Length: 396
Ligand SMILES: *Cc1c(COP(=O)(O)O)cnc(C)c1O
View 1 (spheres, rainbow, N blue to C red):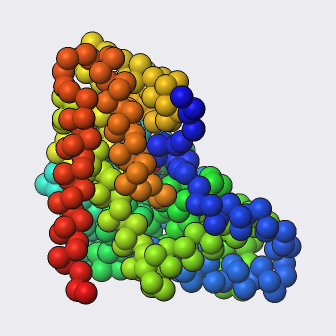
View 2: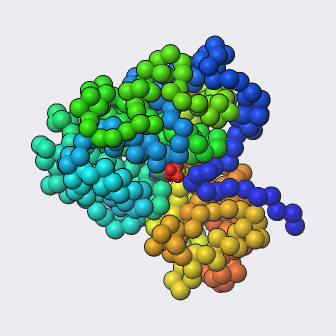
């Protein structure tokens, strides 16, 4: 049969057609009133998307650039920082903070696990300047308790920086209510546009902290970027096409919410949660275990390969037989698990189709463990339950 190539990877994710058209048409110079109007509009919409009254900045880089900026702008050499690490992206915080000569303490958990609040509390000191964490650890599929960590920091001078690069648009995060000082996202995740743009919302406390930072910085000078943004500009040449695509994606979300972008964003989150719940039910029906069973997030579902089998086989068969691109494990986790994304432009049919394909692949790899149709039935009944619930919850 024909195979259509489809991404089920947790970044890059499938592109929204309206965003692709906007990008193709974006033949605009960045120092013009036309571009300033677009940039200012997108920055304002991004506040709503993130759910904050804080300033939102766009940076021309992948998500890691914004992670680096939140170390280089908020710390000074020898500052004590605490990193919560239970996966490849937690490890990235440690590496970046060390590169800027911070004095790093880590609360480390095994891959697939999450943190207990008393373990974090035990490592927090009055001298801890910043806590760095992930909202969702994309390498393991785990969701971390951002609200719990924010509560531990309430009333202290410790800043909270959250890599929500796959958390935004998949997870309910009350940025201002909980007191998240910096929250970071990336274009190639839930926003349905290509890689190349990172964004971050910055609190008043964090702006204040930057005044005393003694780290070297040039391109990622956030106070400078803030001044440019206030004029509807970026400090350097911005990725004009990506910003046009972002504008189209945000307009699309607003349309989904009947004109209300916050509502459209909430629908995007519910959508990811439904796709994730269907996928977890399907995995169980296939006799497969989750990699992060205690705290699975909605951005991506990480599924363990069966004993004695490499996840390489699952990843390769899904691609060669069905054109479905899922992610393997990262680093030491390669071969142990495969990851199916739900963030951004996925729907019921995408999810059901992938689960159907996974049944065919697993029936070849582990024959006799389940009947064809078991996983689809499990996913369909999750879908029925969830849509029934929302149908009841929504007044006519
Ligand atoms: C994708 C991702 C990043 C950023 O990766 P880039 O390749 O730099 O965009 C960081 N943290 C998490 C949790 C991610 O999923």
